[in-house]
Length: 200
Image (cartoon, rainbow, N blue to C red; front, top):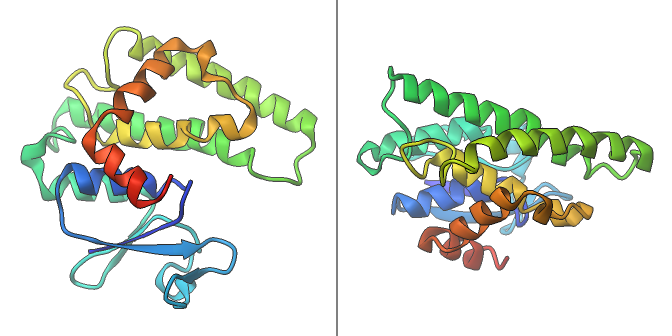
């Protein structure tokens, strides 16, 4: 498999999961500005959407969209329990969290990267984000991870996008449960290895 990634991007989440599962893969860096890979290949020919993550599987197919990639990877090693089994209510809870992180946390923080937004718009985005942080904290104050069963692909995703908060002067110390969550994941060997490989 090949994981197309960019430093400080959401591609860190599948990178972490690949290492958690100890799956063989090649890590291919993409320049988000030029849309070229490190070897000079046209990334738009690989993923016409133009953004990472993209995962090329062994049959040549390319998967995009973080939550889809994460669930695909978890399914390759179900014994690792990074996702509850299909057909269970717990699996639906996982999908619920993946959607929430994608639309409310990733989406909200993602808007803040837009330099064209005036500061007053960014203030409104942050206010909405803070309400979403509070929702996540309701769960993380009573358990270590988003799912009661333990670490899952949803945690890798949340960890990844929360790392963007300092870029926008968002101090997570206001949400101690999020700080503890980030520190907990920072200690996982797969997280350390992924961060080191991306030189983060």
